[in-house]
Image (spheres, helix red, strand yellow):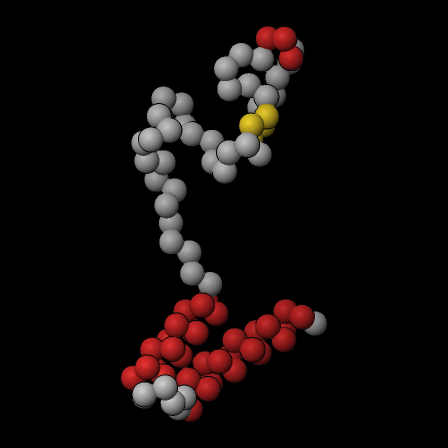
Length: 83
């Protein structure tokens, strides 16, 4: 939710008050134009699991010691977060 400070509800004007948007568009930018906020974000655990999957595909679906170690790294990080 994006909020603006509105001193008078009767005089809020266009774009004043609260609205449901993920991001506020900069002034003058139309809603179809790019906002330069399209970042790809990967969690480290996702990267480790993608690497594990690639290793297993190369090995015909068999996990080697590297793949097992990568999965165990993810499991250990989850255990540390749960404590």
